Amino acid sequence: MRLFVGRVLSPVRGQTLTEFVEPLGTRILIRRDESRQQTRGGIVLPDDAEIPTITGRVVEISVQIDRDDDFPIRKYDKVLFHPKRAIPVDFEPDNLLFVVPVEDVVAVFRRTPASSPAVESADEMDETDD
Image (tube, rainbow, N blue to C red; front, side, top):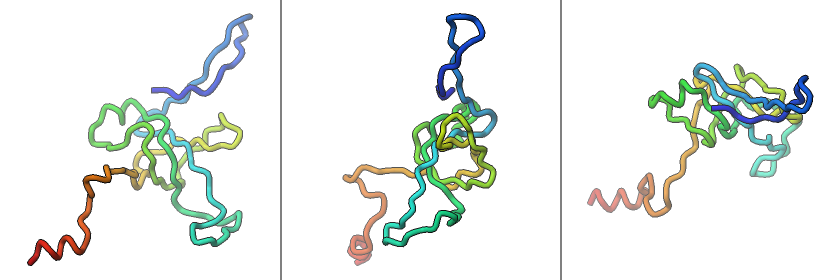
């Protein structure tokens, strides 16, 4: 379970080494979504506006989380996480990678097929009560 980061020149002539990021313990590697400078309603946010939670995609999970069925997080899931204990990874110039303890993930975004709605509408619930 490693995210390929890049190639590095080796001191041995003609060889290249590859670098990987592998989260350890109960941690995951998240690629943070780009921060929006404007809300959907059109309000422009200042550059120093601090939002306490951040969304991103899980790009790698530790072996411990992968083997434990109690953690519903899988690779490529979109998650909402609290950035307080997130550790930035400096392999990319825009610094969008973070190693995050799984305890700081507060939500996982899921999708259900359109043919089977997850929640009934209020009208449908009223019809069944009659």
